[in-house]
Image (cartoon, rainbow, N blue to C red; front, side, top):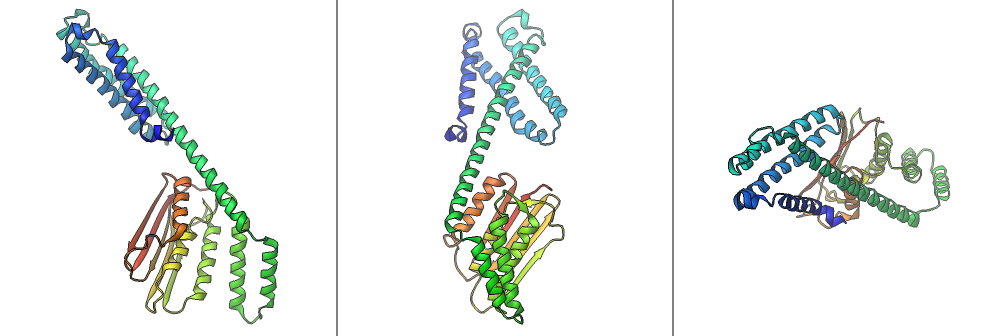
Length: 341
């Protein structure tokens, strides 16, 4: 069934059936006006129908459905149907009156009602086919999301450590650290908050963006403890990055990748993380310098592949991801259309 919709076989079947049925109903034209005019009738009528149908599906419906401008859509669809009827009327007068000698078809508006009815029928039928295709594709997306979710939960269960034991152990270590060693205590506390976030707050489909940003900050702060003065690490967050939800743990693979592949040679190494929002567009970018290599293909691990797949499933049609690889740098830019909650 997937190949049926993927290769547009519904369109092939629709037009094959439409053309064959039209040829059957106009078979008498072969004797009345000849083969050339018969073929011209098939081409003109179905060509005009194709213009009406695809203008409606590809232009009118996408332009007005999201804005809920129903009456505007009906107005433009009406104009489209009238335009089809007028053009077909011209050809009908030529075909039946001038070529076929039928005096009853000499009146220009003779077939107007019939032509509009035919166009309206095929428009309605094509809308039904398009809605069926969209329903099937949406159902497949939902099915893929469920499969991915079950897989993730299974992997999580396999790797899960008893949370109570884990946090009790962290607390024990925290109080064993000398109170004068504030850095160690703060580091352990940040690590504890990251684990708490992963274990208890990431089970839903979306999380407040503020919590996701805090999680990233904790991760970057922990990484700063491991780097020396040869590393310049910037983390910039816009003041308006709040008030909307994001899929949990969506951004961390890009940040992990930057720290994993940043150059380890004693030179000026940089990692720049920028998070911002402009109206309903959330922007996230990560830049890092790296060792002089030709490409990172095959070395970026499964993390980036998984996050690309999650973006396709969760934000299909609402995100744009660009990854720029250069011999000495790696740059990720992600934009997601968001809605306030």
